[in-house]
Image (cartoon, rainbow, N blue to C red; front, side, top):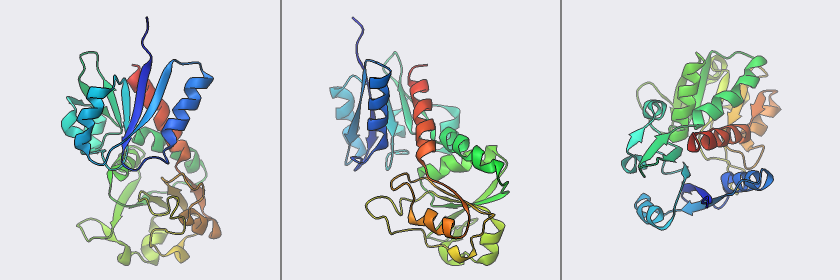
Amino acid sequence: MKMKKTYGLLGKNISYSFSASYFGDRFEKEQIDASYENFDLQNIEELNEVLKANHLNGLNVTIPYKQTIFPFLKRLDPIAKTIGAVNVVKFEKDGSLTGYNSDFYGFKNSLLPLLKKTTPKKALLLGTGGASKAVAYALESLGITYTFVSRNKKEGQYTYEELNQDIIKNNLLIINCTPLGTFPNVNACPDIPYEFITNKHVLYDLIYNPTETTFLKKGVEKGAIISNGLQMLILQAEKSYEIWNS
């Protein structure tokens, strides 16, 4: 008898998650004998108990465990190793775990349609977490140079206070990789000088709930091309499923 496959999402405070409803709907629609569960952990060490108690076939990984998952993995896909973050875990036949990154694939392929309307050569990445590393990798593959923007001063990065008209003018792609503006804190947004945004800019927000964040609304007011992170999520989810079953 063929065993029902079980997949899941590993993260912290993830009751809002897209993945469980997305995969649940997909499995039902395509009559796939599989389930998808949220594993909401307060500490990455709790993963040991999850692995013992469940017969898993694959995991997605979200904030804040995209890097702290590394010690649990036997292997790292070369792309995940270069990015320095994992959002997909494949369970091998011998029981060992391999880490992959499908975030970069989702971001890159959701960004490409926007680049048909404009071709930015330089980008600002707001935030320096695990998701921003995948975005940076995707931008490199597209030949777009980027600079991280952080609250703390580091070499080769901007702080939010340093952003001015010239910097905004010279970086026509601005990507929010922070959680600022996520439901329920929908009025929050990254502290950048929005008055210098123009109709030549592309504003991309990795957040998908709400569908139009304050960051994106401020872009719309200036005529910018905008996108939220929903298509990225769908594409990375499809890639995850492909990895689990390859």
